[in-house]
Length: 136
Image (cartoon, rainbow, N blue to C red):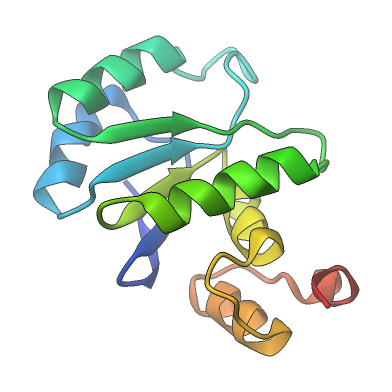
């Protein structure tokens, strides 16, 4: 599992497995958020398996899917709500982690400046500099 910690309350990861849920709970995460549509790729594990494993591990689970490089306002608002209302650290995942980091930057649940959002993304290994004009 390739967890990329953004700060003490948020991390992103590429696709995770149902077998990762207890490890995430043991690491202190309280919430898992999936930003992929179910069945986006044939090799993707079924969302129902991940949801069941998350619940068995005592984790909250939220599904806020986006695809095709589109980030509808409703999805960004839901992403921000989950981030703000989570009882503890959130791990968001998608195919590569980029979509989750992009949603974090666009939704801006922590009210950060553009430079702060781009810097946090870069520190986590994601270059979002091409999005600068969309973040202001």
